[in-house]
Every structure is written in C-alpha cells, then in structure tokens.
Image (cartoon, rainbow, N blue to C red):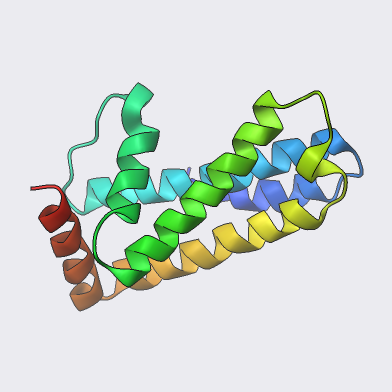
Length: 139
C-alpha cells in the first residue's frame, strides 16, 4: 500500500460530521505525506532510521536543505504534524476541529505537497537536485 491511500481516507473521513471525524482525518492527511516522503527518501538512496525517529528524520531532510521544493514539503509536514498532534493530544477543547475548514485545508496542503514530491521524483534532474541538496545539508 502507498501512504497516499491515507489521503483518500482523510477525504472520506472528513465528510463525517463529528469532531472525531475531523480529528482522525487530520492524522491521515499527515501520514499520507509523511509516509510518501519516507518512501521517497528510501528510493533516493537514504538509509532510514529506526521507526521511533523516522518522523524527525523525514521532516529534517525536507525542511533543512537549501532547496525550495523540499522546503515547501517540509513546511507542509510541519503544519500537518502540528494539526495531528492537536487532534491526538489536545482533547479538552475543540480547537481546530470546531468545523471542517482547518481539516479541509490540511487535506489540500497534503495533496499539494504530494504533487510537488511527485514532480521531483518523476524528473531525473529535479530528483538529482533534491538528493544533492539533502546530502549537502546532511553530509
């Protein structure tokens, strides 16, 4: 299964009307992007760390390098994980889950970031540039 399947599930779950639906959908949007980024790094020749540190590893490889597309994806990972953390750990108030707006925005952001990731991965020169930027940031 590809991680992006979670984005389809996020869309489906977000059609639900409850706060719980919105919270779960936000997590699936994050995981859709994070897992696809993790898999891309592996295919690009990077050795992945143990699962307990993979989130930070993936985020750093996209957010840190001096490469615009990678940074856009890194920014998306950051905002999506913040929403997922709010969904999973801040249960006392509705916060971002009062209505569907923030979750719909998160789903669009994940889809846009996946589009950029696909564009990078499908173009040999763009992919080589991204890999070189990551290697330069993490020698």
